Structures are given as C-alpha cells and as structure tokens.
Image (cartoon, rainbow, N blue to C red; front, side):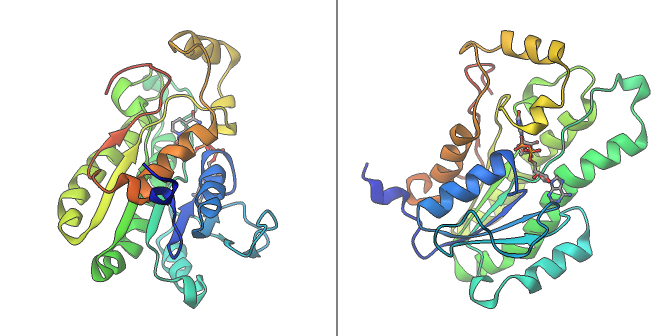
Length: 250
Ligand SMILES: NC(=O)c1ccc[n+]([C@@H]2O[C@H](COP(=O)([O-])OP(=O)(O)OC[C@H]3O[C@@H](n4cnc5c(N)ncnc54)[C@H](O)[C@@H]3O)[C@@H](O)[C@H]2O)c1
C-alpha cells in the first residue's frame, strides 16, 4: 500500500461538528491529505477561513445540524467553488447526560435524537444527490460503540447512535451502485469534552472495561475516517469500523 492511496487531492469534504474533539481532528487530517475542507459547527463565530489553516484549505461555517432551515442555508452559503461535496463526515453530536430511564424526559430524548440522528439525516439529504449525480461520494457517519454495547442511563444516546448504524446500512445499499460509499465509525471512549462531561466514577469504570487500559485519542479516530474517505477504503460499504481499544467485538 502506497501513501498515494490516502491522498485526497481534488476532493472537497464537509465535516459537521468540526470545531472540537474528533471532528476538529478529522478536519485537520483530511486537509493534511490535500482535501479542501468545509467545517460546520454551532460554535464557529467568525465565518471564513479558519485561523488554524496553514494553507487556505479549511473553511468554517456556523450551522445547527438539527435545524432544517440552517442546513438548507448551509448548502447555499458554501462558497460556490466548494459546493460539490465529495466526502461528508457527519460528526456533530451531543453526549447523553446520564439519566436513569424512569427520569428520562422527552426533552432529554429529543435533544439527543435531534442532533445525533435527525442532524445526520438532514445534512446527508442535502449533499447525497450531488454525489449520486457525479458518481463519486463518501459518507462517514460517526456513531458510537454504545450503539452495540448499550450503557446504563444512556438509553437516549444509545438509541440515537444505533439509529445512525441502521441509517448507514440502508443508505449504503441504495448508494453503492452509484459509487457512493456510506459507512459508520463507532468509536469507543475517546478523550474529548464530550467524554469528560461524565463523572469521574463513570470514567474510571469505563477505562477499566478497556483491554488497552486507556481511552482513545481523536487522531486515532481521524485515521479511520481518512481510510474510509480515501481510495484505501474503496471496498467498504455499509460497514461499521470500531476503533475501541479492544472493548467489545461488534
Ligand atoms: N468522545 C467519545 O468518547 C465518543 C465516543 C463515541 C462516539 N463519539 C461521537 O463522536 C462525535 C464527536 O464527539 P466528540 O467526542 O468529538 O465531542 P465534542 O463535544 O468535542 O465535539 C462535538 C462537536 O459537535 C458540535 N455540535 C453539537 N451539536 C451541534 C449541532 N446541533 N450542530 C452543529 N454542531 C454541533 C459541538 O459544538 C462540538 O464542536 C459525536 O457524534 C459523538 O457522539 C464520541
């Protein structure tokens, strides 16, 4: 396998949730492999070229992926030369606050489902047809191993992430004949703000479940996204890859 298999020259990527954690690392990794990257997030205040970009290859836009109007406007606000999105990484997500099921409110449920599942649908809907028309596309949806493993007090989060897996599998069957490959990454616990929102007890318990004895890092997940985005990943369709430190087999 040569380095060129991972080269993304000429490709344009959109990464949702690209302002922090795993998404930010995916933005940097795709750009480092010569993609032009549009990153959207709730927290992008100054629109335009992101200051972190050494070359003018990373563009940042504000968008709430759960809001259909904002997602439609996002497509219009992407600079015209970048509108043909080749690679979409649906990474924006919110963690579930730990809530015993008996106390799980509709508001908790909707907050998590709206970003983690509805957001994936809305953004994908906006960019999928263009990939089909151009007969080349990669869609990478960030789920979680909790979709498979489950987690006490996290029914809302686990349901949203399991929904992403089902969405991916269904869409991959329609898309692969058009050379649009749709896959999921289901990471185990990764050192980001989302993980560290949990209590120390919860974190200690999680770490003790991991055969490698440590949490993952964002670059370890971004490497999997690069695989799926590049020619190196050209035979993956409808799959779930789970960088998870040996926790559970899917
Ligand atoms: N960190 C982990 O342990 C872990 C494990 C498995 C899966 N994941 C998933 O990875 C993805 C990235 O999470 P992370 O750990 O990097 O967390 P993070 O909190 O660092 O990053 C999430 C990003 O999504 C953005 N976001 C949230 N709601 C949004 C919205 N409505 N519209 C646009 N952007 C929005 C946030 O502003 C933030 O920048 C999430 O989908 C998460 O569920 C994380």
